[in-house]
Image (cartoon, rainbow, N blue to C red; front, side):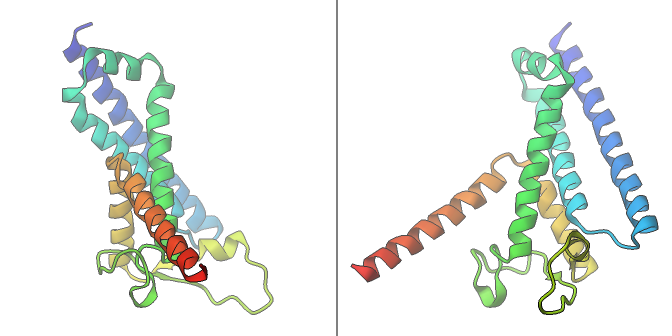
Length: 186
């Protein structure tokens, strides 16, 4: 098999994976809408990350060598790992947004920008245990915020370095606060 044949095979596999992802998110959206009347945005975030990885890999396939292509195509699990890692990174970015760590109320997050999504939370009565139904009701506050969330999660899957860089900034920020705290106690 020539390198161009390997690239064409990879693009076919990635096309099938993307179609599968679109079908799954469509089916899940329908199922949640029918059976629960609502759907949280976490699944959209995870699938956006996985789709970002597929698009990135398809774009990079022209630059991959024969050995890299051979490794990716040796087993479907090799492509699945890429997708799962991207979905996990998108999930981490989702949680960072949800927790307000990136934007924070009143500019208390790592970054201050209107590029990040805002969320609305359901009212939870005092003394009530948090459950999955309540978490699934957390939503971006507007269609624009939903779009921002999906775009950022796609970027997290597309760029292998995006989420790790954010985690690095978070780690450095936490380390800096620890050092200041230790210095104040000395």
